[in-house]
Amino acid sequence: MSVEVIGFRAEWCGPCKQLRPILDELDEEYEDVEFSHVDIAEETETVNEYSVQSVPTLVILNDGEIQTQMTGFQQKETIEEQLTALV
Image (tube, rainbow, N blue to C red; front, side, top):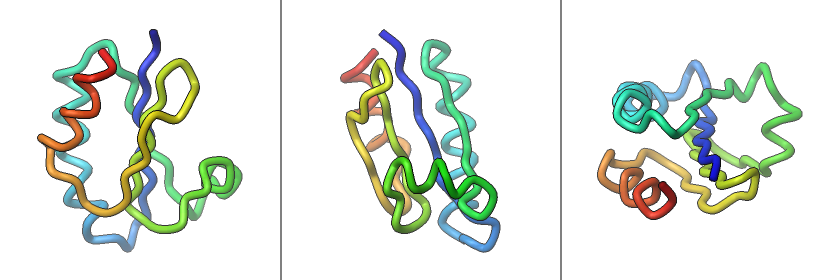
């Protein structure tokens, strides 16, 4: 099973900046989960692939399939609940 979290963000986005340290913490805590960050201004093809409409957006994949898509700032506990169900 391969779990991945993609964080879609923008340089000008305040909530994205608040979410970044939470994702960094989770990245350290969940060694079996791959975390990546996508700047919506630089990677428009990826943004379109996942139909991202606003930032921040988190897409959680399991074996390449979308399991959850969360828009807006998320508390660490909320993200952990989603990850715990998959790992």
